Image 1 (cartoon, each protein chain N blue to C red):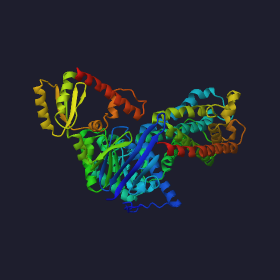
Image 2 (image 1 turned 45 degrees about the horizontal axis):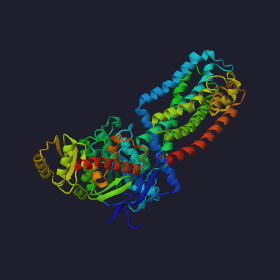
Image 3 (image 1 turned 45 degrees about the vertical axis):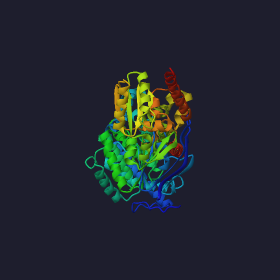
Image 4 (image 1 turned 30 degrees about the vertical axis):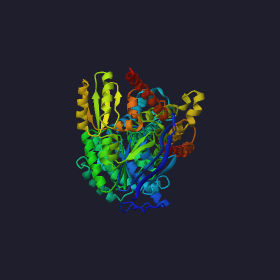
Length: 281
Length: 353
């Protein structure tokens, strides 16, 4: 280096490169961006309102319109339905990860982030963390709605909370998947239309709304063991008892299945999303 | 003098459906404390150069250094020294002005108390104090640009990159922003400014490089560039092409610059506007030519391009609907040259007859 250069001009901004320091800044930057993403949610209350109205409409539709025609042996249909609706709601909600990232790319905010001395991973972590926190709120609202229409969890608070954690964890893995979609889309509108064909079959060809035994046998294999279904069955087991799944399997069987899927998805999605973020110009 | 920015033989090719050589061996140097203007039309490579210098994009070849640090090898350090304000006003719609500035401050890893104070200071400085706690949705285009610039300044950068800071702004907002930038420069900040407007480069930059198809095609001070170009453009509209050709020949005698005849419009750059206008009018009157329009105007970027490259900026070519979107820059240049040659042919035959 031939020229002496003034040190960074602001006091108290250490830029040491130790691992602890890197982790500290990763956490700090993730917190900053999580806060920013959540503030955006509160600034558009309409969006939050309508994204909550839609799952409520699904509850009412299946509880009072289709539910009468769907026969469940082990438990009432409303008890069968609600765990399925929870998973459907967070799955649909994870699409917002793709829309949010596509929008940030489109508007040039990510361009600004890339020129800042911030942690590289914080953009994706901040986005997925904000969506995770939003899902906590959504599950609370849906639980209240469920109780109002006759949902009666019967396994105790701890077991119920374990079910909620399982759903949140699964939704978090989905968010990373939709981060890849968002980083691949040319704009937020396209990100949205790209996301739904992925989420729709998984949500409906599943154990979420109807008993698996009512489906043709060639469909049952997929419908039973795909990641949505095992998570729904696990939650159903945890919230209203293993008999309610109508599969004869134990709670721990479904919980392990769900956790395996969720870990598997995270292991695949996170590196792909990070690579996509790095190479997207 | 120490150099704030050194760019040597920078190369970048975008591979996609169509290969685009965005930077084709760009070199320039910016001394500390000066304002350097990178002047060029859309798609000339200005923004790509800025993106490489601000560590957003990796170059394929060549080198770029900011304050002596290589932007690729020392990217993390370079990011602590620079500020970037872009033409797309990259600020967050859903946050307030203050929240935007504080977010950028936090992401710059500045102490919280400093960030809070700095946001207040910048909102004041950019006339946004009253709007500081309103969401950006309520901001005008000019206010957004001011906030974007303020966001670039949160960490007091030593080198500031302004990528088309006033593109798309109304004249009043543009003027306001120019004043802000002038004040900054007075404070000793090194600025790299890209622009499509000769007027903007002239007003703000002490040194200019004109960039076209990823290459620097001219360099100098705004004064020297305007001197080469002529200070003013005389533009005469005629009722017929025949009159236009005759007028072109007459205006050629006004000064060192050759006139350009496009249909019924004749343009010539002149060194002394009013004098040339009077002389021109007298000469036309003596020949019995009655112009329909007669204007004096400042030379535009397009005039610079015309005199440097013999072609107009890509924008105009596109607007003319030539439909040569599939051609490489080199092929397009060749096509334009051919078209100009063809356009010149009737002139030659007209003069023969």
